[in-house]
Image (tube, rainbow, N blue to C red; front, side, top):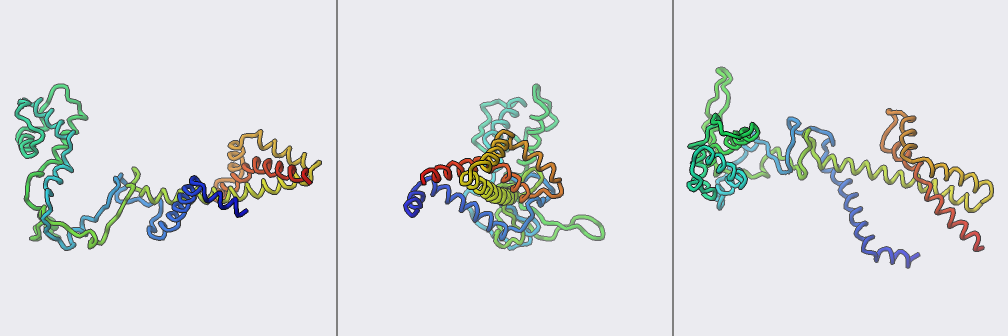
Length: 304
């Protein structure tokens, strides 16, 4: 027995599988302790969020602001909103609008944005342009507005009496940064959300936990049934063996998927759950375990 265990743990495949299983179990156990949100809780207005860290805008405005001299900050800001495809699309529109192509340098960001600002008109009809392309240019133009400007954003509040927006005297400059650790409401979404605004990682962990529960319970049920019937069939033999083998062959012939559907339907929707599903799977998955155990028992009995 000791020699077999040593051989198993010397197998690279076993070690890799064991580490993966241990990591999955650890995540499934620890993650719900740290993130207590319900798996189907909707974030925000129920819209899609790409992976990232999200900071509440209201709280970030109220947090301490710092002025940092970050190298190439403006260039990175522009690069995040102006991709190479956007530059080519802008060049295509400007050429179609009558600007000579040799006067457009897409590598010169400032010049390109100035040309775009001076010549782009959403009302201009360009031959061959589809509505989807026109809407793309409208969205692109909206995202590029004020990109070269260094002016800050003025914070305003609504007057309770008049309803008009009034300046508070605070200005958020483009050089102002906040420490994310000092913002009260921060949400990290490593895998983003689905189209309904639900955290994909939380859903994945919850689903993995249920899958592991079903797998463990189904495996235990199938092993116990298969082991018991296999031992009885191989050791006693005779009519008992014939009866057990008849049932085993019956379960082998009938597709297990059909049995799962029939048993699940007969249980009723109210009583269905992870444990119930696991037991049903275990009740239909013991056949090959019983056959293997029976063969081993008969082999050992004949040796005696």
